[in-house]
Amino acid sequence: MVAHPKTFTLTKEQAQKDARWLVVDAAGVPLGRLASQVAALLRGKHKPTFTRHIDSGDFVVVVNAEKVILKGRKLDQKKYWRHSGYVGGISFVGAKDLRENNPTRMIELAVRRMIPKGALGHQVIKKLKVYAGESHPHAAQKPEVYELPYLSTGQAA
Image (cartoon, rainbow, N blue to C red; front, side, top):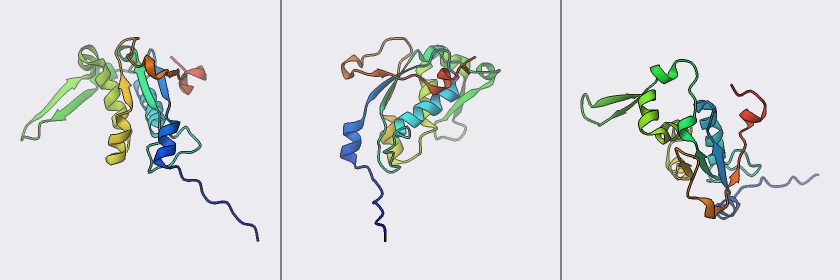
């Protein structure tokens, strides 16, 4: 009879020690592809020690948020809505206006909607930092530049 090894389960302490800081450049990358990659990095799905009930992801700093692209006619047609909670309290803003006024919000919303809802999702999304320009204030954490797999395969438009 062969003894099978136990299934490895990550603990919170191990996950916190293992967390890295990654910088992702959003210039020229489609919004959805960027958001799905960043969401996977935040969850920790790129690590072999991924445990679904533990926050084992990395901190992600996204720079050049104003240079993210929307393909097709999404820039003119896509609407972002919010509701005040009152009757008739819905308000819309177009993607073009959102990019001009608050370009970081577009990426934050896309990534937030790809993270699972609940306590773990709230904890994970706090590790996302988005900046409109090239610079960021996280140099003290010694972040590593992360090359998106989408761009390394030569599929970029």
